[in-house]
Each structure stands twice: as structure tokens, then as C-alpha cells.
Image 1: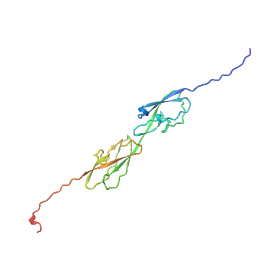
Image 2: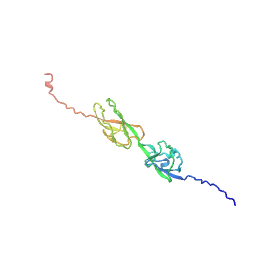
Image 3: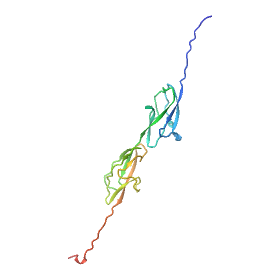
Image 4: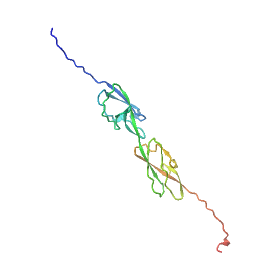
Length: 193
């Protein structure tokens, strides 16, 4: 009997895993707080679709992380390979939006106040009022031109505007000063003497 050798080569298919994307306080389309994507072991991960990028009021999406390692950037793009032999959960990273407060003197002829910079969800104070209006006393700030006082001078604010680089105008509220006039009666006979 003749002997022969046969060479056999193993063929391996990479495993697929499910990765959960956690919106971390934000939301995906249809008010979902998580979505899943499929990844293949040791293969490049596909960029995210628009439906796989969450949003959060007052914040800008900054990517997805697994622990401290960033897997997707703020546009949902990646150049990484999946090297874990299991699925995992990635968490959305967020950056607080910066917004600006514009101060309107609402009739004041004083020099305009510079707008102030604030961050959404971070407590900060409004700038001290420098406006003056002859015959009136400053009462505070309103979110409407002819509105009631809703913010005091140097009030603490956290969420006046959720839009990145958005501006919120606040208006000075004035109260007319009251003056007391004292009339002194004089003797008419002494006038002119």
C-alpha cells in the first residue's frame, strides 16, 4: 500500500460580538437610551450612522468610550479594530455647551455691558450691573423686554441657554424713583418786603 500525505489547513471565521452604546443621560432616535452595533473580532469597526449618535440637551456629543479609551470621536468615526473576545458597553462622553448672556440696559444711556460666558449645567454668576437710568432704580433682570424681575443682580445661573455658543438677552428692570416734595407756606404779606 502506498503512503501519501495530505496537508490540511484550518479555516477560522472571526467571532461577531454585540456592543451596546449607552447614551449616558442622552437619547438616541425614538427616545432610546441604548442601541447596539455588531463588531467582528480583530476587524475594523464601522463608523456610526446618524441614528447611532445620541443627543443631550445642553451638551455636545464628544464620542463613545470603553473605560477611558475613546472608540468613536464626536462625528461617530473610528479607525480602531475590535480586539476583545466579547461584547461590551461603550458610554457616551459629553461636553457642556458654552453660552453667552447679553445685557440690555432697557433704556439706559450708560455704556453697554460686555456679554458674559457661561457653561450649561455649571453654576456661575451674572456680571454686576453697571447700567444707570436717571430717575430710576435698577431692580434686576428679566428675560423679556417688558417683563418682571426674574434674575437678581449677580444672580447664579446654570441653564439659561442650551444651544452651543447660543446667546440669551436679559433686560434691565427699572422702577421710577419716588420723590417727596415739601411745600412751605409763607406769609404773603412778607413777600416783596
